Length: 158
Length: 106
Image 1 (spheres, rainbow over the protein chains, first blue to last red):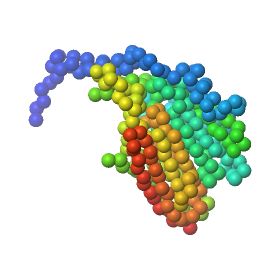
Image 2: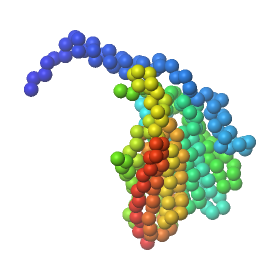
Image 3: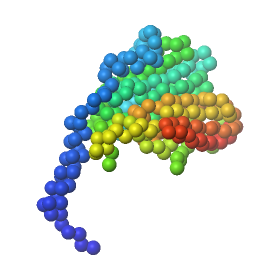
């Protein structure tokens, strides 16, 4: 079947809706972003007064993300995972989503490997922090800075 | 109708570290989106996931709205004996779903 060539009107219509879809989410006001202060307090809720040291944790997220709605993330912790020395839990936080918590993952020596993967949402270009609690109740962390070109959460529901 | 995808190796050697992958179909509506009329769409997410291996909990996760739709998880465990993995998802508005997979350990 022969399709009509696009007219100037349909072209402008498409361009207009593309502009709406592409530009509006970026300029939309986000009234309830998590702030670095909220990030810090969410971390305090998990670790209490314990110090959080950098190291042992590896946080893998693509550094440049086109679509913040589904971003693959893997967190692994260097640990022998024996009965005496293992990872108890992994906690993931972010800086600028509406809420600072992303997920908590509870494992144990039976896991064999201290590694979890999931898919996350990122509402903005921001920092993600992963914290691991070890069997001796020390906390270790890693962070990653991710650039997001299309944000999650801010789009309108059709 | 919720549907789950589960990936567990059907058999393993005793002591092997095996990877378990799960995916549950769910919109994970964050509660932060608005309709074009400006109304906030209420939150509807899965909040918790548990995996039991022959009745013993081996993995648990708390989800927040920052987990993407159709939540996917991968985690590991040591294959210690033949038996069953049971998976459970619990969420807002009474959401509850279960799935299971068997493994033969030699």
